[in-house]
Image (cartoon, rainbow, N blue to C red; front, side, top):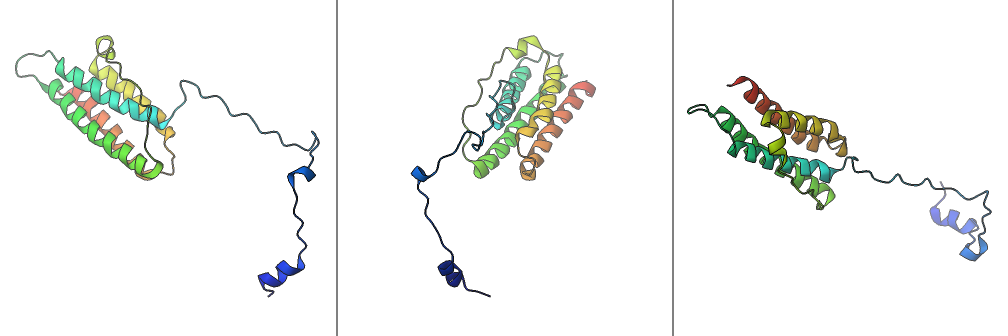
Length: 166
């Protein structure tokens, strides 16, 4: 086996300077243009923003529950949800930031949703969003997807309570 130094001495290396290189239009590689980001494109910050929105909206729904005396099941179910979602969101985002760096540019939360829909419908719509937009997190990051699975489970547990424990 030849040593690297022996091979290096025998090879003829010629330095090429920029002035010596001329490419004709036929030999130039054309780089494809990047697709412009659209408003609906999935990103981790949009995903994380939705988790914060869900927590805030659930808290507002929790405070607006009007029920007969002794039937605070909706009030209690929503409290469990907004306490739980905050813990999971915190775990998910801190873990993500440990791997990828600080996340910035969160969306502003619009609480007007609470006057346009009921808590059960909001949770169903939001869990659908989470299930479809989890693709914004690299699928190889199973440690992050495990936390997302817990978030989805919390949504369905709360939906169950709001639907069946009246």
